[in-house]
Length: 482
Image: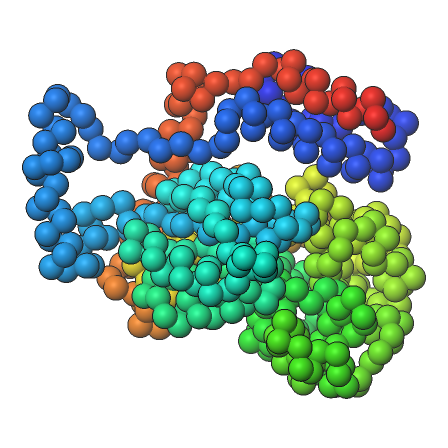
Protein backbone atom coordinates (compact mmCIF):
# COMPACT_ATOMS: atom_id res chain seq x y z
CA UNK A 1 0.00 0.00 0.00
CA UNK A 2 1.16 3.58 -0.62
CA UNK A 3 2.32 5.69 2.29
CA UNK A 4 -0.45 8.27 1.89
CA UNK A 5 -3.02 5.72 3.10
CA UNK A 6 -5.00 5.94 -0.13
CA UNK A 7 -7.65 3.25 -0.48
CA UNK A 8 -8.88 4.47 -3.87
CA UNK A 9 -6.58 2.14 -5.80
CA UNK A 10 -7.45 -0.91 -3.76
CA UNK A 11 -8.01 -3.20 -6.77
CA UNK A 12 -4.39 -2.80 -7.84
CA UNK A 13 -3.39 -4.94 -4.89
CA UNK A 14 -5.74 -7.83 -5.71
CA UNK A 15 -4.60 -10.81 -7.78
CA UNK A 16 -5.49 -10.33 -11.45
CA UNK A 17 -6.90 -13.85 -11.58
CA UNK A 18 -9.81 -13.07 -9.21
CA UNK A 19 -13.30 -13.00 -10.71
CA UNK A 20 -15.49 -9.92 -10.31
CA UNK A 21 -17.48 -11.64 -7.55
CA UNK A 22 -14.31 -12.70 -5.72
CA UNK A 23 -12.98 -9.14 -5.97
CA UNK A 24 -16.18 -7.81 -4.43
CA UNK A 25 -15.97 -10.42 -1.69
CA UNK A 26 -12.32 -9.56 -1.05
CA UNK A 27 -13.18 -5.86 -0.75
CA UNK A 28 -15.92 -6.56 1.77
CA UNK A 29 -13.65 -8.76 3.89
CA UNK A 30 -10.81 -6.25 3.65
CA UNK A 31 -12.91 -3.30 4.80
CA UNK A 32 -14.26 -5.34 7.72
CA UNK A 33 -10.79 -6.51 8.74
CA UNK A 34 -9.34 -3.01 8.39
CA UNK A 35 -12.26 -1.55 10.36
CA UNK A 36 -11.43 -3.76 13.34
CA UNK A 37 -7.79 -2.74 13.25
CA UNK A 38 -8.48 0.96 12.76
CA UNK A 39 -11.15 1.17 15.46
CA UNK A 40 -8.71 -0.42 17.89
CA UNK A 41 -5.97 1.96 16.75
CA UNK A 42 -8.10 5.05 17.35
CA UNK A 43 -10.29 3.73 20.18
CA UNK A 44 -13.44 4.74 18.30
CA UNK A 45 -14.09 7.56 15.84
CA UNK A 46 -15.35 10.60 17.73
CA UNK A 47 -14.24 12.90 20.54
CA UNK A 48 -15.51 16.04 22.26
CA UNK A 49 -13.51 19.14 21.29
CA UNK A 50 -14.05 22.57 22.91
CA UNK A 51 -15.24 25.37 20.65
CA UNK A 52 -14.94 28.16 23.24
CA UNK A 53 -11.59 29.78 24.01
CA UNK A 54 -9.69 29.47 27.30
CA UNK A 55 -7.66 32.70 27.11
CA UNK A 56 -6.65 32.79 30.75
CA UNK A 57 -7.72 31.10 33.98
CA UNK A 58 -10.48 33.63 34.66
CA UNK A 59 -12.38 32.41 31.60
CA UNK A 60 -13.40 29.40 33.68
CA UNK A 61 -15.51 31.89 35.64
CA UNK A 62 -17.32 32.73 32.40
CA UNK A 63 -17.76 29.23 31.02
CA UNK A 64 -18.57 27.72 34.39
CA UNK A 65 -19.44 29.20 37.77
CA UNK A 66 -20.31 31.92 38.65
CA UNK A 67 -20.95 33.37 35.17
CA UNK A 68 -22.81 30.43 33.67
CA UNK A 69 -25.70 30.71 36.12
CA UNK A 70 -26.95 33.62 34.01
CA UNK A 71 -27.27 31.19 31.10
CA UNK A 72 -29.25 28.70 33.18
CA UNK A 73 -31.73 31.30 34.41
CA UNK A 74 -32.11 32.81 30.93
CA UNK A 75 -33.01 29.41 29.51
CA UNK A 76 -35.28 28.71 32.49
CA UNK A 77 -37.27 31.82 31.60
CA UNK A 78 -37.33 31.03 27.87
CA UNK A 79 -36.47 27.49 26.78
CA UNK A 80 -35.99 28.62 23.18
CA UNK A 81 -32.95 30.55 24.42
CA UNK A 82 -31.22 27.16 24.75
CA UNK A 83 -30.73 27.23 20.97
CA UNK A 84 -28.77 30.50 21.25
CA UNK A 85 -26.92 29.98 24.52
CA UNK A 86 -25.83 26.33 24.22
CA UNK A 87 -24.68 23.88 21.56
CA UNK A 88 -28.23 22.57 21.16
CA UNK A 89 -28.93 24.34 17.87
CA UNK A 90 -26.33 22.24 16.04
CA UNK A 91 -26.55 18.99 18.03
CA UNK A 92 -28.14 15.68 17.09
CA UNK A 93 -28.65 12.56 19.21
CA UNK A 94 -28.04 9.32 17.30
CA UNK A 95 -30.19 6.84 19.22
CA UNK A 96 -30.22 3.06 18.79
CA UNK A 97 -31.03 -0.02 20.83
CA UNK A 98 -28.77 -2.15 18.61
CA UNK A 99 -31.53 -4.61 17.73
CA UNK A 100 -31.03 -4.42 13.97
CA UNK A 101 -27.52 -3.26 13.18
CA UNK A 102 -26.96 -3.15 9.42
CA UNK A 103 -27.35 -6.72 8.15
CA UNK A 104 -26.11 -8.32 11.35
CA UNK A 105 -29.32 -8.28 13.39
CA UNK A 106 -29.29 -7.80 17.16
CA UNK A 107 -25.75 -6.76 18.13
CA UNK A 108 -26.64 -5.56 21.68
CA UNK A 109 -26.70 -1.85 22.57
CA UNK A 110 -22.92 -1.58 22.90
CA UNK A 111 -22.56 -3.44 19.61
CA UNK A 112 -24.37 -0.57 17.94
CA UNK A 113 -21.74 1.96 18.99
CA UNK A 114 -19.54 1.39 15.95
CA UNK A 115 -22.34 2.36 13.58
CA UNK A 116 -23.68 5.22 15.71
CA UNK A 117 -20.20 6.73 16.14
CA UNK A 118 -19.82 6.39 12.38
CA UNK A 119 -23.08 8.25 11.93
CA UNK A 120 -21.81 11.02 14.22
CA UNK A 121 -18.54 11.24 12.28
CA UNK A 122 -20.41 11.56 8.97
CA UNK A 123 -22.70 14.24 10.39
CA UNK A 124 -19.67 16.28 11.42
CA UNK A 125 -17.63 15.82 8.25
CA UNK A 126 -20.45 15.94 5.71
CA UNK A 127 -22.93 18.25 7.44
CA UNK A 128 -20.98 20.34 9.95
CA UNK A 129 -23.19 18.92 12.73
CA UNK A 130 -22.19 17.85 16.25
CA UNK A 131 -23.70 14.46 17.08
CA UNK A 132 -23.64 12.09 20.04
CA UNK A 133 -23.98 8.30 19.81
CA UNK A 134 -26.49 7.11 22.43
CA UNK A 135 -26.94 3.33 22.52
CA UNK A 136 -29.60 2.16 24.96
CA UNK A 137 -31.00 -1.05 26.39
CA UNK A 138 -34.65 -1.22 25.33
CA UNK A 139 -35.29 -4.78 26.52
CA UNK A 140 -37.52 -5.90 29.37
CA UNK A 141 -36.65 -8.59 31.93
CA UNK A 142 -37.63 -11.27 29.42
CA UNK A 143 -35.23 -9.90 26.82
CA UNK A 144 -37.88 -8.43 24.52
CA UNK A 145 -37.20 -4.99 23.04
CA UNK A 146 -39.82 -2.41 24.00
CA UNK A 147 -40.72 0.58 21.84
CA UNK A 148 -41.94 2.47 24.91
CA UNK A 149 -38.48 2.37 26.48
CA UNK A 150 -37.04 4.02 23.36
CA UNK A 151 -39.80 6.61 23.37
CA UNK A 152 -39.33 7.42 27.05
CA UNK A 153 -35.55 7.71 26.70
CA UNK A 154 -35.70 10.05 23.72
CA UNK A 155 -38.26 12.24 25.47
CA UNK A 156 -35.90 12.54 28.44
CA UNK A 157 -32.83 13.56 26.42
CA UNK A 158 -34.65 15.73 23.86
CA UNK A 159 -34.03 19.02 25.75
CA UNK A 160 -30.31 18.62 25.06
CA UNK A 161 -30.57 18.31 21.28
CA UNK A 162 -31.86 20.13 18.23
CA UNK A 163 -32.87 16.90 16.47
CA UNK A 164 -33.03 13.14 16.99
CA UNK A 165 -31.77 10.45 14.59
CA UNK A 166 -33.20 6.98 15.26
CA UNK A 167 -31.05 4.17 13.90
CA UNK A 168 -30.85 0.38 13.66
CA UNK A 169 -34.01 -0.37 15.64
CA UNK A 170 -35.93 -3.54 14.73
CA UNK A 171 -39.48 -3.39 13.42
CA UNK A 172 -42.18 -2.75 14.52
CA UNK A 173 -40.48 -0.75 17.31
CA UNK A 174 -38.80 1.53 14.78
CA UNK A 175 -42.21 2.53 13.38
CA UNK A 176 -43.86 2.87 16.76
CA UNK A 177 -41.06 4.97 18.22
CA UNK A 178 -40.88 7.25 15.17
CA UNK A 179 -44.63 7.82 15.01
CA UNK A 180 -44.95 8.50 18.74
CA UNK A 181 -41.94 10.82 18.92
CA UNK A 182 -42.86 12.80 15.81
CA UNK A 183 -46.24 13.34 17.39
CA UNK A 184 -45.06 14.32 20.87
CA UNK A 185 -41.73 16.17 20.52
CA UNK A 186 -41.12 19.74 19.37
CA UNK A 187 -37.81 18.91 17.65
CA UNK A 188 -37.32 16.88 14.44
CA UNK A 189 -37.17 13.09 14.75
CA UNK A 190 -35.61 11.30 11.81
CA UNK A 191 -35.44 7.53 11.22
CA UNK A 192 -32.54 7.22 8.83
CA UNK A 193 -33.00 3.54 7.98
CA UNK A 194 -36.49 4.40 6.76
CA UNK A 195 -36.72 8.06 5.75
CA UNK A 196 -33.05 8.45 4.83
CA UNK A 197 -32.89 5.39 2.62
CA UNK A 198 -36.22 6.36 1.05
CA UNK A 199 -35.03 9.90 0.35
CA UNK A 200 -31.85 8.95 -1.50
CA UNK A 201 -33.60 6.08 -3.32
CA UNK A 202 -36.24 8.47 -4.63
CA UNK A 203 -33.48 10.87 -5.71
CA UNK A 204 -31.79 8.12 -7.69
CA UNK A 205 -35.06 6.97 -9.22
CA UNK A 206 -35.90 10.51 -10.37
CA UNK A 207 -32.79 10.60 -12.52
CA UNK A 208 -32.92 6.95 -13.58
CA UNK A 209 -36.49 7.41 -14.82
CA UNK A 210 -35.46 10.60 -16.60
CA UNK A 211 -32.70 8.76 -18.46
CA UNK A 212 -35.00 5.84 -19.28
CA UNK A 213 -37.74 8.27 -20.36
CA UNK A 214 -40.30 6.65 -18.07
CA UNK A 215 -43.18 8.40 -16.29
CA UNK A 216 -43.47 7.52 -12.60
CA UNK A 217 -47.26 7.74 -12.80
CA UNK A 218 -47.41 4.96 -15.40
CA UNK A 219 -44.76 2.44 -14.40
CA UNK A 220 -44.80 -0.89 -12.59
CA UNK A 221 -42.37 -1.10 -9.67
CA UNK A 222 -41.27 -4.16 -7.70
CA UNK A 223 -40.18 -3.53 -4.10
CA UNK A 224 -38.21 -6.54 -2.88
CA UNK A 225 -38.19 -6.56 0.91
CA UNK A 226 -40.80 -5.11 3.24
CA UNK A 227 -38.78 -3.61 6.07
CA UNK A 228 -38.61 -0.04 7.30
CA UNK A 229 -36.81 1.18 4.17
CA UNK A 230 -39.05 -0.27 1.47
CA UNK A 231 -42.31 0.44 3.29
CA UNK A 232 -41.25 4.07 3.49
CA UNK A 233 -40.09 4.05 -0.13
CA UNK A 234 -43.54 2.81 -1.14
CA UNK A 235 -45.10 5.72 0.74
CA UNK A 236 -42.74 8.22 -0.88
CA UNK A 237 -43.32 6.75 -4.36
CA UNK A 238 -47.06 7.25 -3.96
CA UNK A 239 -46.48 10.84 -2.82
CA UNK A 240 -44.34 11.31 -5.94
CA UNK A 241 -47.20 10.19 -8.20
CA UNK A 242 -46.70 6.44 -8.57
CA UNK A 243 -49.87 4.36 -8.76
CA UNK A 244 -50.18 2.32 -5.57
CA UNK A 245 -51.82 -0.52 -7.46
CA UNK A 246 -48.76 -0.87 -9.68
CA UNK A 247 -46.40 -1.34 -6.73
CA UNK A 248 -45.70 -4.99 -5.89
CA UNK A 249 -43.93 -5.51 -2.58
CA UNK A 250 -42.36 -8.78 -1.50
CA UNK A 251 -41.66 -10.14 1.95
CA UNK A 252 -40.12 -13.55 2.72
CA UNK A 253 -43.41 -15.28 1.83
CA UNK A 254 -44.05 -13.59 -1.49
CA UNK A 255 -45.96 -10.56 -2.77
CA UNK A 256 -48.15 -8.53 -0.44
CA UNK A 257 -51.84 -8.50 -1.39
CA UNK A 258 -55.27 -8.19 0.20
CA UNK A 259 -55.54 -11.90 0.94
CA UNK A 260 -52.39 -12.17 3.05
CA UNK A 261 -54.19 -13.43 6.15
CA UNK A 262 -50.85 -14.00 7.93
CA UNK A 263 -50.38 -10.23 8.07
CA UNK A 264 -53.95 -9.17 8.79
CA UNK A 265 -53.96 -9.47 12.57
CA UNK A 266 -50.21 -9.40 13.20
CA UNK A 267 -49.34 -6.31 15.29
CA UNK A 268 -45.69 -6.60 14.26
CA UNK A 269 -46.52 -6.03 10.59
CA UNK A 270 -49.24 -3.42 10.63
CA UNK A 271 -47.38 -1.23 8.13
CA UNK A 272 -47.19 -4.13 5.70
CA UNK A 273 -50.89 -4.91 6.14
CA UNK A 274 -51.72 -1.30 5.31
CA UNK A 275 -49.77 -1.70 2.06
CA UNK A 276 -51.58 -4.96 1.33
CA UNK A 277 -54.76 -2.90 0.97
CA UNK A 278 -53.51 -0.50 -1.67
CA UNK A 279 -50.66 -2.16 -3.62
CA UNK A 280 -50.62 -5.04 -6.09
CA UNK A 281 -54.07 -4.38 -7.53
CA UNK A 282 -53.83 -7.49 -9.69
CA UNK A 283 -53.25 -9.77 -6.71
CA UNK A 284 -50.06 -11.21 -8.23
CA UNK A 285 -48.65 -14.14 -6.27
CA UNK A 286 -45.46 -15.25 -8.05
CA UNK A 287 -42.08 -13.76 -8.85
CA UNK A 288 -42.63 -14.28 -12.54
CA UNK A 289 -45.92 -12.37 -12.50
CA UNK A 290 -44.45 -9.53 -10.47
CA UNK A 291 -41.30 -9.06 -12.56
CA UNK A 292 -42.99 -9.44 -15.94
CA UNK A 293 -42.97 -6.01 -17.57
CA UNK A 294 -41.75 -4.25 -14.42
CA UNK A 295 -39.99 -0.96 -15.13
CA UNK A 296 -38.07 -0.70 -11.88
CA UNK A 297 -36.90 -2.90 -9.01
CA UNK A 298 -35.96 -1.58 -5.58
CA UNK A 299 -34.43 -4.40 -3.55
CA UNK A 300 -33.68 -3.87 0.14
CA UNK A 301 -33.79 -7.41 1.43
CA UNK A 302 -31.27 -10.11 2.28
CA UNK A 303 -27.73 -10.15 0.99
CA UNK A 304 -27.01 -11.77 -2.37
CA UNK A 305 -25.53 -12.31 -4.76
CA UNK A 306 -28.34 -14.65 -5.85
CA UNK A 307 -31.30 -13.19 -3.94
CA UNK A 308 -32.55 -11.59 -7.18
CA UNK A 309 -32.37 -14.07 -10.05
CA UNK A 310 -31.12 -13.08 -13.48
CA UNK A 311 -34.17 -14.81 -14.96
CA UNK A 312 -36.44 -12.39 -13.08
CA UNK A 313 -34.56 -9.37 -14.42
CA UNK A 314 -34.89 -10.78 -17.93
CA UNK A 315 -38.68 -10.56 -17.54
CA UNK A 316 -38.60 -6.82 -16.85
CA UNK A 317 -39.54 -4.12 -19.34
CA UNK A 318 -37.01 -2.57 -21.76
CA UNK A 319 -34.66 -0.07 -20.11
CA UNK A 320 -35.32 -1.65 -16.71
CA UNK A 321 -33.95 0.05 -13.60
CA UNK A 322 -32.49 -2.21 -10.89
CA UNK A 323 -31.61 -0.95 -7.42
CA UNK A 324 -30.01 -3.84 -5.49
CA UNK A 325 -29.14 -2.21 -2.19
CA UNK A 326 -28.50 -4.91 0.39
CA UNK A 327 -25.17 -4.42 2.15
CA UNK A 328 -22.46 -5.47 1.98
CA UNK A 329 -23.44 -7.85 -0.84
CA UNK A 330 -26.17 -6.64 -3.24
CA UNK A 331 -29.08 -8.95 -4.08
CA UNK A 332 -27.63 -9.28 -7.57
CA UNK A 333 -24.24 -8.06 -8.78
CA UNK A 334 -24.40 -5.16 -11.27
CA UNK A 335 -22.65 -7.14 -14.01
CA UNK A 336 -25.23 -9.93 -13.74
CA UNK A 337 -28.14 -7.46 -13.76
CA UNK A 338 -26.74 -5.73 -16.84
CA UNK A 339 -26.21 -9.08 -18.55
CA UNK A 340 -29.86 -9.89 -17.85
CA UNK A 341 -30.94 -6.69 -19.60
CA UNK A 342 -30.99 -3.97 -16.93
CA UNK A 343 -30.41 -0.46 -18.27
CA UNK A 344 -29.38 1.27 -15.03
CA UNK A 345 -28.12 -0.56 -11.95
CA UNK A 346 -27.50 0.92 -8.50
CA UNK A 347 -26.28 -0.65 -5.26
CA UNK A 348 -25.51 0.48 -1.73
CA UNK A 349 -21.76 0.16 -2.26
CA UNK A 350 -19.27 2.84 -3.16
CA UNK A 351 -17.06 0.50 -5.18
CA UNK A 352 -19.79 0.09 -7.82
CA UNK A 353 -21.32 2.83 -9.95
CA UNK A 354 -24.49 4.57 -8.72
CA UNK A 355 -24.16 4.19 -4.97
CA UNK A 356 -27.49 4.63 -3.16
CA UNK A 357 -26.42 5.50 0.36
CA UNK A 358 -28.41 7.46 2.93
CA UNK A 359 -25.18 9.22 3.91
CA UNK A 360 -25.90 11.33 0.84
CA UNK A 361 -28.98 12.84 2.46
CA UNK A 362 -29.12 12.80 6.27
CA UNK A 363 -26.29 15.30 6.90
CA UNK A 364 -27.90 17.86 4.59
CA UNK A 365 -31.47 17.28 5.74
CA UNK A 366 -30.60 17.46 9.43
CA UNK A 367 -28.46 20.54 8.81
CA UNK A 368 -31.44 22.19 7.14
CA UNK A 369 -33.84 21.56 10.02
CA UNK A 370 -31.23 22.68 12.53
CA UNK A 371 -30.57 25.95 10.69
CA UNK A 372 -34.21 27.00 10.93
CA UNK A 373 -34.70 25.29 14.32
CA UNK A 374 -37.52 23.20 12.94
CA UNK A 375 -39.98 21.40 15.17
CA UNK A 376 -40.36 18.39 12.88
CA UNK A 377 -39.27 16.72 9.63
CA UNK A 378 -42.20 15.93 7.38
CA UNK A 379 -42.27 13.48 4.49
CA UNK A 380 -42.68 16.40 2.08
CA UNK A 381 -39.48 17.94 3.45
CA UNK A 382 -37.66 14.67 2.78
CA UNK A 383 -38.94 14.73 -0.80
CA UNK A 384 -37.70 18.31 -1.19
CA UNK A 385 -34.26 16.98 -0.22
CA UNK A 386 -34.60 14.12 -2.72
CA UNK A 387 -35.33 16.58 -5.51
CA UNK A 388 -32.35 18.72 -4.47
CA UNK A 389 -30.06 15.67 -4.62
CA UNK A 390 -31.42 14.67 -8.04
CA UNK A 391 -31.06 18.23 -9.35
CA UNK A 392 -27.45 18.43 -8.19
CA UNK A 393 -26.59 15.24 -10.08
CA UNK A 394 -28.44 16.49 -13.16
CA UNK A 395 -26.50 19.76 -13.05
CA UNK A 396 -23.25 17.75 -12.93
CA UNK A 397 -24.41 15.63 -15.88
CA UNK A 398 -26.37 12.43 -15.29
CA UNK A 399 -25.69 9.23 -17.22
CA UNK A 400 -26.40 5.52 -16.90
CA UNK A 401 -23.43 5.26 -14.54
CA UNK A 402 -24.00 8.56 -12.68
CA UNK A 403 -27.48 9.17 -11.29
CA UNK A 404 -26.47 10.51 -7.87
CA UNK A 405 -23.77 12.89 -6.61
CA UNK A 406 -20.85 11.56 -4.60
CA UNK A 407 -20.45 12.07 -0.87
CA UNK A 408 -17.29 14.08 -1.55
CA UNK A 409 -19.47 16.84 -3.02
CA UNK A 410 -19.96 19.64 -0.47
CA UNK A 411 -22.55 21.35 -2.66
CA UNK A 412 -25.14 18.57 -2.45
CA UNK A 413 -25.35 18.84 1.34
CA UNK A 414 -25.47 22.64 1.38
CA UNK A 415 -28.15 22.68 -1.33
CA UNK A 416 -30.26 20.16 0.57
CA UNK A 417 -29.91 22.11 3.80
CA UNK A 418 -31.09 25.31 2.15
CA UNK A 419 -34.01 23.57 0.41
CA UNK A 420 -35.14 21.81 3.59
CA UNK A 421 -34.85 24.99 5.68
CA UNK A 422 -37.09 26.77 3.16
CA UNK A 423 -39.60 23.91 3.11
CA UNK A 424 -39.78 23.86 6.91
CA UNK A 425 -40.58 27.57 6.96
CA UNK A 426 -43.21 27.21 4.25
CA UNK A 427 -44.88 24.43 6.25
CA UNK A 428 -44.85 26.49 9.45
CA UNK A 429 -42.47 24.10 11.19
CA UNK A 430 -39.57 26.53 11.75
CA UNK A 431 -38.84 28.57 14.88
CA UNK A 432 -36.84 31.21 13.02
CA UNK A 433 -36.67 32.70 9.54
CA UNK A 434 -33.61 32.17 7.39
CA UNK A 435 -33.39 32.85 3.67
CA UNK A 436 -32.38 30.20 1.16
CA UNK A 437 -29.09 31.96 0.48
CA UNK A 438 -28.33 32.44 4.19
CA UNK A 439 -29.00 28.77 4.89
CA UNK A 440 -26.88 27.69 1.93
CA UNK A 441 -23.95 29.90 2.94
CA UNK A 442 -24.11 28.84 6.60
CA UNK A 443 -24.34 25.14 5.76
CA UNK A 444 -21.47 25.32 3.28
CA UNK A 445 -19.28 27.29 5.69
CA UNK A 446 -19.90 24.82 8.52
CA UNK A 447 -19.15 21.83 6.31
CA UNK A 448 -15.97 23.41 4.98
CA UNK A 449 -14.91 24.26 8.54
CA UNK A 450 -15.46 20.66 9.68
CA UNK A 451 -13.36 19.32 6.83
CA UNK A 452 -10.63 21.88 7.42
CA UNK A 453 -10.62 21.07 11.14
CA UNK A 454 -10.20 17.35 10.37
CA UNK A 455 -7.38 18.19 7.97
CA UNK A 456 -5.67 20.44 10.51
CA UNK A 457 -5.95 17.88 13.33
CA UNK A 458 -4.41 15.29 11.03
CA UNK A 459 -1.57 17.58 9.93
CA UNK A 460 -0.82 18.43 13.57
CA UNK A 461 -0.96 14.72 14.48
CA UNK A 462 -3.82 15.14 16.94
CA UNK A 463 -5.45 12.64 14.60
CA UNK A 464 -2.64 10.17 14.12
CA UNK A 465 -1.93 8.67 10.71
CA UNK A 466 -1.77 4.88 10.99
CA UNK A 467 1.17 2.98 9.61
CA UNK A 468 0.69 1.60 6.08
CA UNK A 469 1.81 -1.70 7.57
CA UNK A 470 -1.55 -2.02 9.37
CA UNK A 471 -3.39 -1.67 6.07
CA UNK A 472 -1.06 -4.12 4.35
CA UNK A 473 -1.56 -6.61 7.17
CA UNK A 474 -5.34 -6.32 6.86
CA UNK A 475 -5.12 -7.00 3.12
CA UNK A 476 -2.63 -9.86 3.46
CA UNK A 477 -4.88 -11.61 6.00
CA UNK A 478 -7.82 -11.43 3.58
CA UNK A 479 -5.85 -12.62 0.57
CA UNK A 480 -4.46 -15.54 2.57
CA UNK A 481 -7.98 -16.76 3.26
CA UNK A 482 -9.60 -16.29 -0.15
